[in-house]
Image (cartoon, rainbow, N blue to C red; front, top):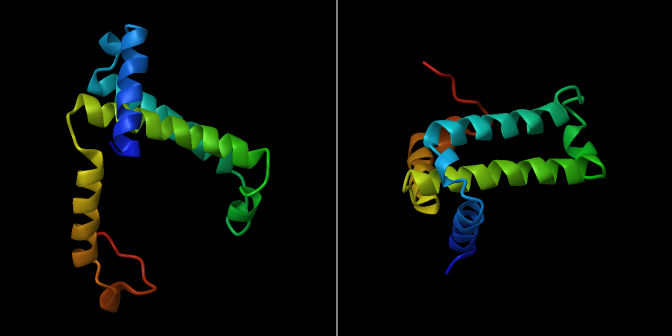
Amino acid sequence: MSDFDDLTERMRAFTRARDWEQFHDPKSLILALVGEVGELAELFQWLPADSAATLALEDPLRTRAAEELSDVLLYLVRLADVLEIDLPQAAVAKLASSEARFRPEHFHGTAPVKD
C-alpha cells in the first residue's frame, strides 16, 4: 500500500471513530478546504513577495505553514475519498495534460494568458 493509500485509510478511520462521516459531504469538505487554504494564505498575506520563501524556511513560519499545508492535504484527501476519485491517478493525468498543453518551447519563461 502506498503512503497516499495509508493516509486515505487513516483519514477514513479517524472520521469513522468520531462518527463524523455525517458531516463529510462534498460541500462541507470543500468549504473546510477553502478555509484551510485561507489560513495558509493569511500566513503569507503581508510578507514581501521577494523574501516570503526565505522567511518560510525559519520558525515560527515554517512550523505554521507545515500545519496549514497538512490541514489542506488532509481535507483534500478526505474529499477525494468521499468523491471516489483516485487523486494520485487524477494528478498524474492532469500533469500529463498540462505538459502537452504548455510545451516548454512555447511557454518557457512566460506565464500563460487566459483567453
